[in-house]
Image (tube, rainbow over all chains, first blue to last red; front, side, top):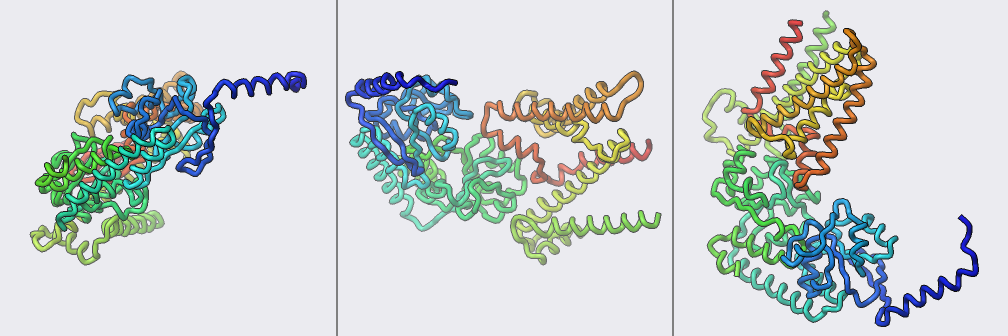
Length: 303
Length: 220
């Protein structure tokens, strides 16, 4: 390819500047996302694309739901998102995202890999990664997103109400000293569980229990039948309503007849969206868990 | 003859030692005294009243059947290896090279991901789907390798390697295209193979299969 003739250069510069002039309110700002990446964005952000359901829920909670112009195929909450354009994120459908013309792509470090998004950067679409490692991070996550998208007031109120909700639930569940051992399973065969880094243990603690896998080192450990026999969980919670009944578990794990949760019929299935998405609905998940851990107090806890 | 006898004795002794290790050690610690107590009670039929229910389940209901299943499967695979090597007169031959293993994997993943319907209960149909996949693969390989009435060993190996890749691609695609992401890890887990679900009830079928295969091979 021949080098660009020099006489074209002023033309190019003129074009770039006229583009800038077109966005009268456009202000370039540099922000740092939760992964510590520098992100150049142009405010105000009018079109947002989210790459994970939890991120969508955070944006809606922060009061910026009307900016969302496209979501992943896994999204289903709030109900409004079902009428939005959906695209595959596994693998990421970059063409669909470019077609939506977003000012900013919001991603979750628990679902999306930064490498997947460098392609967007080459296309000139800025991306911002959110990270919530613990339950307590979620209210601040809502505040951060509200600040980023200019809906600070709504986000602040939503975050405050989340914090209040957590405090109220904690007050209810910490009223007694009894702490049932709770085993939360991500899969029944093989037995996938949550390792020590997961926020699931925070949820269980807030709901008034002690998580059986809180000390397991790996992030998604595969448990043995022996482990469960020894851990003696009082309550077992899974996400599949067919398997997670006492009989369903006994069929897959016949030796668990002596496990307290199975013997006492305290095996429950929870809506996975309430515990797998590090967003505002984790509080709902904790309330449902509290109802499972202490059925007698469930009416008070689930309000 | 004498050397064979010696080798066999050493190997059987090693098998017994590894069986005992498999029963004594596992994910959770069980004191050696308790392991012995569980085994003695189970063998002599004494009432397991004074035994810890958890120890009993770990040792007698989880570890012992798992160790026996491992022995049965290992023995079965050894038989298959001998049969394959004799069939193609090549010491390198094994089910992987002839495409049988990947055919079985493809059949199993097609079943597991709901492409093939369950006919006779999930666990049995899964095994049957694997068996059928392996049969389909080796039949095609055999037909391709046959010229007239003779079977060329090198054609058999080449066709087998091609079939292996094809069946591997089917497994990968079916796994990837699965509508249920929760099943992905489960399929991977299944294809890697695991003895974790072993129970006393699951020992009869593989024992019978291995025994029938052994007797058939000896008779031939």
